[in-house]
Length: 136
Image (cartoon, rainbow, N blue to C red; front, side, top):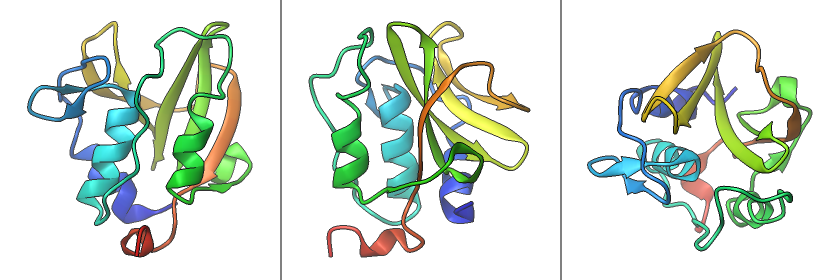
């Protein structure tokens, strides 16, 4: 687990949810939480635009992982996990000690989900050990 990344994500708990949100002042969605955690951990992420909240394919989020040099890993070792909260809704969550941080649309905030994930896992990635190296 990338501790700096997980700590940066934890600092976002309580931030308002906003679809396509990229600024913690106005709100974040799941991609925004990952991107802002990366910023707070020391790098400027490459962030996708134009993806939809509901889709049957995870393909819209895969370029986000590639562009930011996330390494594919099995989910128990993943920093970022792509889950399917429904058959038509992919969602990114960040693994931390004891659970996961994510933007919860229903609650309207970035929250901590303790324990195991309640959703099927589609993919998992580790963020680079040194986030400072992305884009350099």
